[in-house]
Length: 190
Image 1 (tube, rainbow, N blue to C red):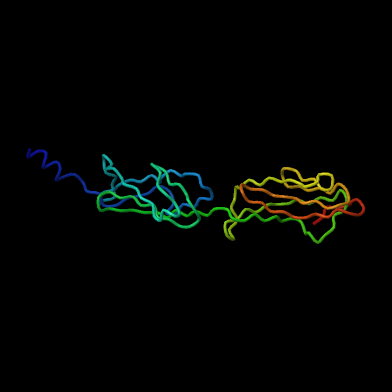
Image 2 (image 1 turned 135 degrees about the vertical axis):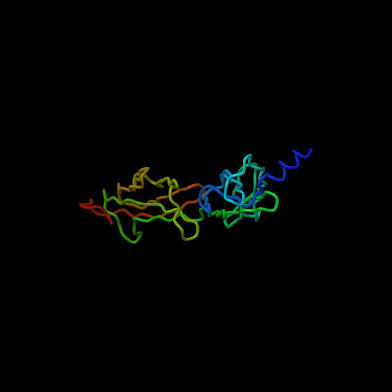
């Protein structure tokens, strides 16, 4: 009995929690994210062995929720993901910036395109005013006989008339009306 008590008295106590990666995580989808890996350290900064069980929480639940070992985004905003062992706590910021806007660039709707004129369109997916990188944008034309647009956003005037080009990313859409008319182009439309 004395031997067991002596061992318990020598067991290092948790003093801090160290997270792998950045102090802040930003996500742009509603896909669940693994909880950051954490290591419980003693007062000397050494990892406890064995590692004690960590209790996780996420607040507020209106931004993200804990789902097993994953954090599931709920809505745009900022949440705190907290790890706790006894009275020792550590936390990191979990930012949810869901896409809420899609903008088309590369064409001036006030300009009439010549037949065979081209323009490289781009679709910017944004959360607020921040452009989100790595978002997929698909393109379509309301009338491919007037203006055609390929998968990369290159639009080509085919015949006189009007057509609407639509960019889509997830649930977001943006449109631009294109007017084609006049002689065939000798240079790309800017």
